[in-house]
Amino acid sequence: MEDFVFKILMMLADFKYLASTSLIICLIYILCKSKRVYLLDFVCFRAPEYSRVPISSYLEHMDSLNPQTLEFQKKVIERSGIGNETYLPEGMSKLPYDKSFNSTIEEVEMVLFSITQQLFTTHKINPNSIDFLITNCSLTSPSPSLAAMIINKFGLRSNIKSYNLSGMGCSAGILSISLAKDLLKVHRYSTALVLSLESVTANLYQGKMKSMLLANCLFRMGGAGILLSNRKGCREKAKYELSHVVRTNLGSRTSAYECVMQDLDDEGYIGVSLSRTILQVAGDALRMNLETLGVLVLPYSELIQYILAIAWKKILAPAKKRGPYIPNFKKAFHHFCIHAGGRAIIDTIKDNLKLTEIDVEASKMTLYRFGNTSSSSTWYSLSYQEAKGRVKKGDRIWQLAFGSGFKCNSAIWKCISEIKMDDSNAWFDRIDEYPVKVPDLHDD
Image (cartoon, rainbow, N blue to C red; front, side, top):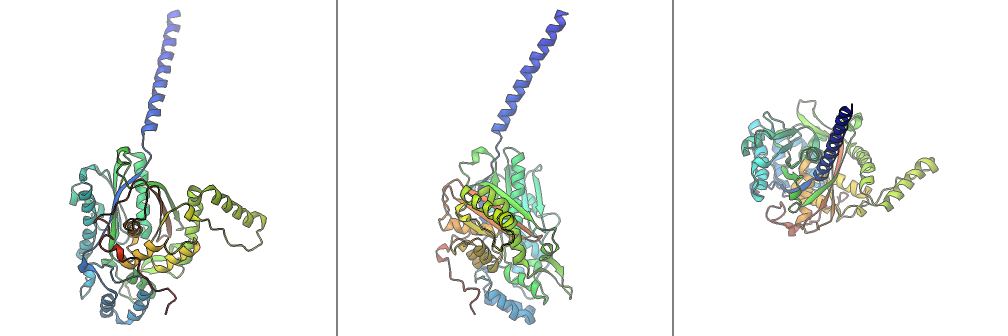
């Protein structure tokens, strides 16, 4: 009996030792596991000069395609905030217009292969070191996928985890960052490559519907490649650390769901329709996004005022008309990279958030020089801030994008190193020429 009791006690002792050892191992694992996501570098596509299309050339080309809509497109372009340095793919400069599958793929390959090669060459990256690949292109989704094209071109390893996002609109760039963040939170010692672009070749609208002609006037060729990692050793050479990603989706509302939609017109032409309600829907999505974002980033002084304003409106004086309190987000962020979807959107956000012209300068200049490059536009804005030498170590950057569905997405970055501009920056060749004076929306 004593031997039996002794054996039981020894087993309990062993179990206690095993449990304590396991606990220590778990604690070490939790402490050692990196939950941080670092942005090593990013590049924005800069097309060759032969792809540059001045407004006059664009209008002349549109006149040959559809002279009945020329006056409307001319009026929109003149008031859009787009300048004479934007780029269009080769297929759009041909007569007749070439929207073939081969022409579309040529555009996609030009953008994707260029930015990927630039990242790999600049940082001497072995393609086999990429653990996750995420590509996003809203309106062009070939088979094999865009992600498969990159894997084939650069010989990425066979067990890479790849994702190809389509139909997600202009906010897909931040959505891709969100996906990369979630993957890097789970998988240790990993590197992710995110490629964002929109193909305009196959999506030029040739009909007469004004709501669909707007996309012709705004969208231009562009793209961005972003290299992310959760490796602790990468912190020393990383540019930024990801602080937060906040995503808002109003797809359950029919009015929001339909305000940006690809469809057929009465003549059978396919195009992307931009509803007149888009500014109102974007405002609703932005307010909902800010409700979550504000709690994460605002200082206590602003949070208290915000809470008191809500209490006043909902509890103390519900019958009185009083506009919503807009927190001062300039106390939380040093730089704003707003999606360059159009000058009206940028100005509306500027007015609602009480920002200054210099706060939205990067977005307006992105629209002026590169046009609406869809999911990559916020990266052109950040590249502009870097080229101007404005981003300093410790600064916080807010990327804000809107997209079909309807979505509003925010990404918050903290600069963790000294930013140096080189010829990989998309603005390197002529940053001293900006900002330029853009006529006011109300000028005749």
